[in-house]
Image (cartoon, rainbow, N blue to C red; front, top):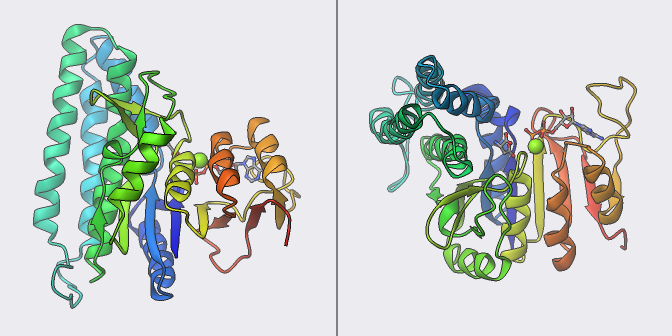
Length: 310
Ligand code: ADP
Ligand code: ASP
Ligand code: MG
């Protein structure tokens, strides 16, 4: 059986939260399922990347300050996740080196820096370049969280989402070619027992990076779940599940323990940000239950989204 586990921005905002997410993955892995982990960018990074692109396109060199802060946050997370002073015993092919991870991720920083410089010189921001810039959030988070998993002695394979999620060129909210993407996804995960990939991003048939719209990592998780005929799709976030109202706005919002696909989709389209509206369809067609759960209260029951039949 395959389980897809998606962790949102707050759940992976920094090393201590990432460690909580890894604990959850490890607990699931021990039960014997194959696991695909889908991660968002570290909390706030997508907004920072948009700011960076915007400043660069206005010829404002302050974009460099944001660039440095983004690199600094990821470096810090690697340093805390891969603790060289406290190495864990690792089986062959597992384990991670802090030095190697910092060197590897710096190649991504270089790529982002060069793209930002190009935008700064051109003084214009195409939607295609904005997607390319935004995609670094998930490119960086998936790499570093994968290294964090490996540093615990757990073998984990990295998958570049752009190789399997194929879209049109509607930059900013690209439409997924389901047939192509499902085929590539099911081929890609054959024989893999634990893998990690970034949500939110894909690519066109001619290799241009695209994004699936803000909050779109939930949708990626659902696409991967449908492609793999997963037994369950789990959306790990920062609240106990789908509530009657946004709990950050309404104090006495109540947890909804079970909800139908239709009702959850309606709430999502009406603005319940806890789940991206496009998440529901792929799961409905394969009748895969989606659980929305809290990374900071993992034993909570969460919300089960299903067809409501038992
Ligand atoms: P993630 O980064 O994990 O994807 P999001 O910020 O996208 O998380 O979504 C979770 C947030 O959705 C919660 O923190 C909450 O404020 C908001 N939210 C809005 N409406 C609801 C609702 N009906 N039930 C639960 N959360 C909601
Ligand atoms: N990182 C992207 C965003 O902030 C996608 C996601 O978090 O689902 O919109
Ligand atoms: Mg979200």
